[in-house]
Length: 225
Image (cartoon, rainbow, N blue to C red; front, side, top):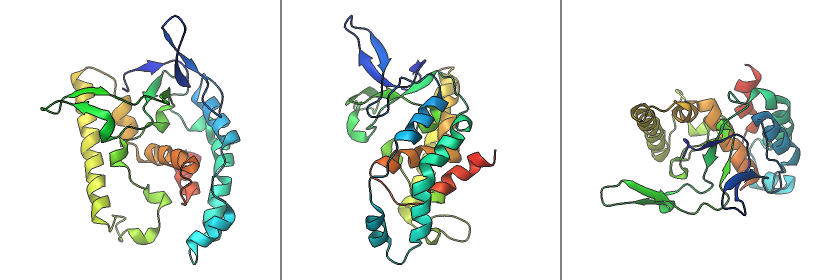
């Protein structure tokens, strides 16, 4: 999918003549010619779906004020950093599947991929929002609670440790496929860059489902560049 690249960021629309083009994103607008313009628009429109009262009740004795501050300021910090977030600001931009799960990948008896289904909501996005398939999702270390990790910053949860290993193996497989097909390494580079993956996850879960976490820490590497 990442080999399908288009000059602007927006939804994939079918024209009356049967061709395809890039249209506006729901509730966001566009299409956008640059990643900067996309991030600025996202920051202007972004609204966390959960109230401060809900957050306080959910966290009880946790660092409520720090999390609330992080959530509240995240859009404005994205906007301030918009022109520094992307390494490929002018595109072309990759195709993104909004529900990339096992159930939407069709394979044969030899596990060869025959096709991908459920393309509703397909769009192009900045490279910095391209993520692993959802079955390899993990909460980014900077957003998570410190007590979930040991003194070497390794996850205490066995499933999380296994997922970290699987993600590394996935990046190797992607890089190998890129090499065999003489493609550039944009996808493996994006997937293998921890700061980029942390940003992609944070932008996605900020709106849906409105996950609690330390969003400010995700942006720190971009502020220091």
